[in-house]
Image (tube, rainbow, N blue to C red):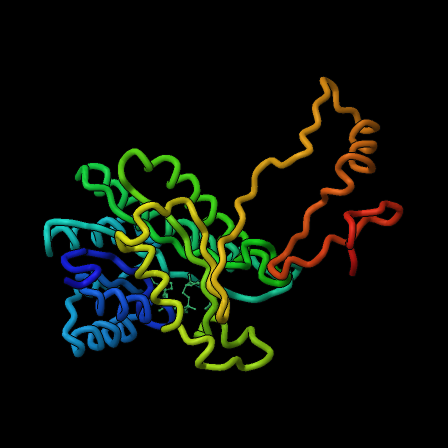
Amino acid sequence: MKLLEDRVIIVTGVGAGLGRAYSLDLSRHGALLVLNDIDEEGLAETDRQIRARGGRAVARVGSVCDWDHATSLVDTAVASSGRLDGIVNNAGIHYVVPSVHDTPERMRQVMETNVLGTQYTGTAAIRHMVASGRGGVVLNVSSGAASGMASIASYSASKGAVASLTWSWALELREDGVRVNAIDPAAYTVQVEHTMAVRPSPVTWSPDRIAPLATYLVSDLSASVTGQVVRRWGDDLHLMSHHGPMAPWLSDPGWTVEKLDRAFRTELSDHLQSYGRDMRKYVPFPGTAGPPGAEE
Ligand SMILES: NC(=O)c1ccc[n+]([C@@H]2O[C@H](COP(=O)([O-])OP(=O)(O)OC[C@H]3O[C@@H](n4cnc5c(N)ncnc54)[C@H](O)[C@@H]3O)[C@@H](O)[C@H]2O)c1
């Protein structure tokens, strides 16, 4: 019995890169797939590769930003097999530009694809999972860039939204048996080709190396894992921390500017946080000590 035998899983953005790699691995483990992409040729090629290896798939061209298309993916899964077990919200776009040169059109496009697209296809899927009473699995795709990255602020914000969506859905749908996690992949694909100064090793950074993590998080092997953002970077695997309130928790009935200034210079000074994808050490404001070990 294969790991995903009889499971029906929607995967979006499968026409290239990571989406194709996830699809091939999910199929290899026995899943019946509903495949999506706006790129008809890329979609057909992934479909062909799956069938050539004896897998089963139904391909649907369309945009994840289109609500009717999102719901039709769920309808396709149910029509094909009477069930939907999981969705991998992989479709996404990316661009690099210093924020001062960003444009409203590009900002809107990246938010529509990465955030609304994930919300549309994800919501269509969870509606079915909850109504069916069988639950299911949602795997979103965030990015290490969500921690902050220069010159891709809009993309980073969109992936931060995907992480927040993951935590909110995980909380809300726990009782309905729907698990929700996100993956922070890193792979050499068309999407990142133009943003890398050095061409990385095609072996170390192959999308195929990320795919087992998607398969694991969709399978019952990860039945106790929900609300997690999991990062694969080169040879590394790690969880991303969840941001929430942290100690020291100061309390005062009237926080004036002066009291706030004192708090930042005293109790909070040692706790100012690192930020950015590379977890750069916090650089203190002039005249303040900053946390121990703070450095440029
Ligand atoms: N490659 C990386 O290192 C990396 C890192 C972090 C996150 N990601 C995320 O992983 C996902 C896949 O990235 P990739 O590197 O394979 O990119 P890619 O550009 O190679 O593939 C993305 C696919 O999504 C499709 N797509 C774009 N807009 C769509 C839409 N509106 N509807 C349906 N399909 C659409 C594209 O046609 C393409 O086939 C994206 O969400 C990306 O942001 C990638």
